[in-house]
Length: 111
Image (cartoon, rainbow, N blue to C red; front, side, top):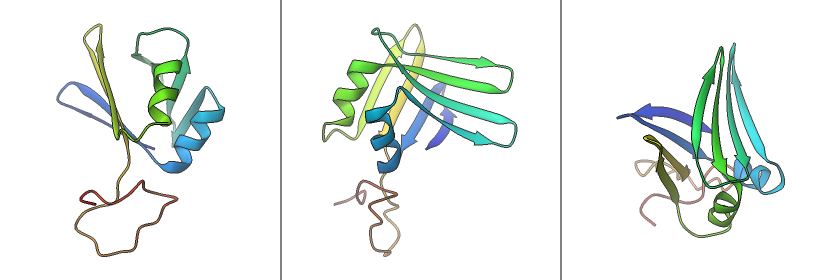
């Protein structure tokens, strides 16, 4: 899982492994030193994110995200309550000739 904030939008990229875990669980997390990043699925239709001490949590609507995870769509986006959130299935870099590692990426960018 990769997190970044760009142009006022939270962007999260998930790997195939993350996708499989989210099919069975209501959340996954990434710990980076003292910082914890949570991706949490919950009932309802609104998405949001929250910062509490050293933990940032992104809350996403469970039914919408599970539908997206099962689809061929590469991204899911919302702008609830002024909170831009973009979730993407991670693709391998287009500038590499390395063979595709299907455990890490969903495909090549220009396939």
